[in-house]
Image (cartoon, rainbow, N blue to C red):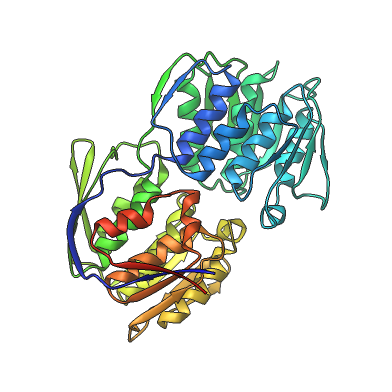
Length: 409
């Protein structure tokens, strides 16, 4: 096992030179570009492993594709290859084979795709047979499922002879990600309308455009956490327009209450330490990737909190709720579901001087707990997991003056 030991650093006044670009935007743009016969020019693509996997596989002639642990790649490529005239087998890691995909497969099958489960019904790996004809131009899916399922259907609808109407039932989660998909599709020339609970996509994707990818607000969220927990800090982050396609831009508002001010400086933002509130409450339905970071900050600042909208965390790279509960307990905090869908965080009375963090093969666990190095010694197990979304995270942390050492056990 690889370990990364990090010594505490209580203050810093620095700039991050390069943030990863948004893999959410990049991966959607790559799928749309492939559907549009690669007519667009995509600039500043992310070096995150998820995006590099998409680049490698989206135009691959291989019949068997391993998406590793990339959920977005699995879901988007399932839909992409479902409308292609070739046979493809999609597989992934052991954890990927535990992540459900049946709702997407059912919807694609209803449209006219032919997909077989090679192991457990409802889960990867999948055998996707050549697409022959569209059987339906309308599907009904739950709105509270992964937004990536719905985004996948929206994008491939541009290739269907009769287009597609997607009717969403119940509560709709992760709305900003669906809006991101719709807005990117329009940039590629697609005709998309969204009225009430129905999304309508017409056939056609001109694709003649140029897109410059913006910085990743999810990646930026960890630097907000560093500023929130430091004794004294200011930090400049690049390539982050406040008017963003990304739902995780809401980190600006969430962290305002937890002790971080954010000032726009052209295409950069300046973060500064400020006073925080004594209690925190938020709904993460539209920004689930921020939940771990916020929970750690609240616990470390000894702020009690209430959370809703955590349901999708169960089916991420790991069961993120269980992982959070286990690791937060190491600093004396508890995360409890007081009633269905409502969670209460009780912060510790005394924060320890050291923590060893298990990362559960989850990049966000590593980066969410890393800011604790502003107040204690931190040991991160398997730190290489950050390559999934932020390959240079530890290097950027070192640039802030944190002293780190690697070891193997």
